[in-house]
Image 1 (cartoon, rainbow, N blue to C red):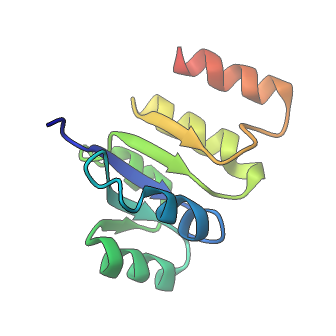
Image 2 (image 1 turned 180 degrees about the vertical axis):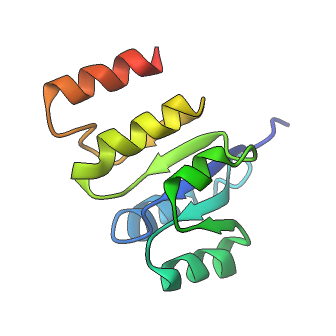
Length: 115
C-alpha cells in the first residue's frame, strides 16, 4: 500500500475547515493532514484536536515543515498567489481553492513556477 500524501492545510475557515477537510475524510489511506495554518488560534486548536497535526500561525513556518509534501491553500482569494508562490518556492506541491490568483499574470506565474 502507498504511503498517504502528507498535507499542510492553510486557511481553516469556510473553505478549509468546511469543505477541504470533509472532502479528505474517508480517504486517510491516500491523504493525511499533518499540519495546519491559520491566524486565528481557535481554528488551529480545533485542527490539532481533530487531526493531531502540527499547527502554525505563519504560512512560512508551515511550508518549512519537512513533513509537509502538499500545501492545500484555502485562504482568501487575494492571498492565493502569494501563498502558492511561497509553497512552490519551498519545493512543495500545491493545491489551491479557486481562483489561482486575481489576474491572468498571477496564474501564469504560478504555472511557470510549478513547472
